[in-house]
Image (cartoon, rainbow, N blue to C red; front, top):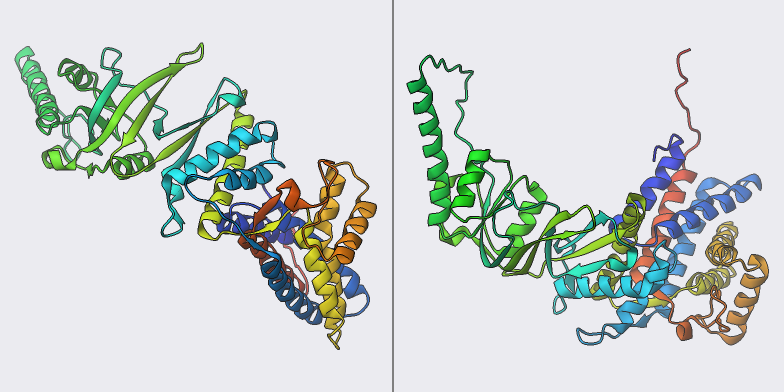
Length: 460
């Protein structure tokens, strides 16, 4: 998406940094920044200096972040009890296009994260989770595969389609005769010379295939293509091969199978081979699209979420939604503090900021109150999107929070009959929420310090 306006570009960057840091809450952070700028405009019209507003916002964000820490709760889960994680991912997927299958999708994401998580260190390597998509089938056909999926097929139709206990040679050198580095031209004027050239070429291929065979490999994965003659020889030697595999995928296969990427045939040896329990080619759909699945990898638990959908847009949107849910599960493995959703955390922070503003003697108190008003934009947007009267709903829930001193009360978007988000099981990560407040405040402070925007006019 191309954004021309300079401030618009800053907001796009804001959303991108939230996505990079947390992976979820990208819409919320832009809504909050927009509301803060709206409130700042009102204060500027009253004649308050931008720096005073910026300082007030900074003070308010500190109060809000401390309040979030105070109202947060520890979240208990382990490898055997993943239900709490599934509930959190379902909260994330509720606002996405995949919400009709959110239970199944949340379970897939949590299982993927738990498969690659190191719970003792509280760390998750997201590089080991790959999300692949293929048009066809329906959303419910999305599955989690304990291995790697390659959108390739076995190079020759007569090669084995299923290899058990595979020993994998991972090559970045092409299966073709070496070419001179300089410009060259070969003159062939007799049939004998042509035959000699063909035999030499065949010898090169035979040597390459023999070296692969001698290393003990039962499957060859190559970054480049190879000649039909080489393909034919590999088939004769009963050595299945996959060609044109991308560099990123090669690295992932090498990490997962414990193999080494080999740049030259002469360096190929048994200790550089990767191993996997099963490699198979599957075909699906009426078009018989083929894909390779590498399962039971030796070195690490690489997993792939294989997304199906009616069209490309659906698959791309599902991939984005699943990425958010995976990031939420990862954040909970890293830090298991949560706050409750439905706008309850924002309203609790707004109340805390308003109380703190009463003790500030300077002009900053106006900015702090404006910050508290801006925080209400999130529950207001939630109420509006759910078809509820926004102003009445937020006012009612906020007064209830003040009366009952219960920070878990939020907007009942699904009209379940209770405003208590703890009962509804709607919650999100503490670090995600804190990051939203801090990033939105920083960007708004940056924009407030801009005096004027001078754009270069186009030469007519």
